[in-house]
Image (cartoon, rainbow, N blue to C red):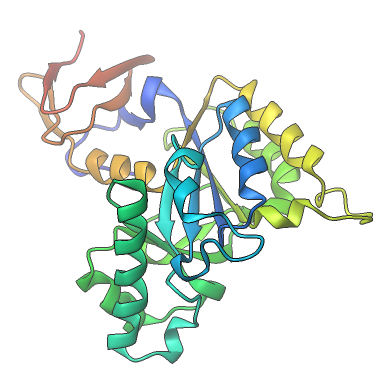
Length: 278
């Protein structure tokens, strides 16, 4: 990602100077989230969970009273109340589906809910315009790129892959050489897909996702985070400023930011200013 006004030898990095980030993203609030969260927690992987408030507590779904504890350390995000195709709704109904979902989820987890995953991955420019009026920070699609570029459009957020390709693509991701731009692997899916009883598909197996998490845990270069934390960090990084005469970096945001300068990983504190070393 490029930042206006920064010299070419100052490179944006993720926390602790890491060059790569991983986000896992799961939809619908299936009861299988319990097992998936346990695996993620054991390996230090973080995820965004996109929930339909209208189905909480239904058979085979997570219950409202467990959301706060179950997803602690991860992100709870909107997936609408009833999982409709948003492009088929009026503007008023889009607002109702998203705003009511967010209000319910916020009351259950006790913290702001600022993201969305599009039901069925379906959206258009009209839907995006409505989301902008609701102050939604990002909206995730199901479009896959199999690439690792930092996203530019947060209300049409693409993914790297579905989790059934995660292990294969992770090999390419982890072999990426040191590069000027940070890189992101974004994986999406549904936790119930791992319960592939009597399936010959090795990706429909809990061992598959656990093996993937084990591989990620072994990598010092990968920053595991949630979608909202990623989006907030990237937006903050774009506001980093450089004063040439003093070789001074200024961070006007409330998020600590990291850069690489002459091979050194440097943190610019929130609301801080930092002279670069000679």
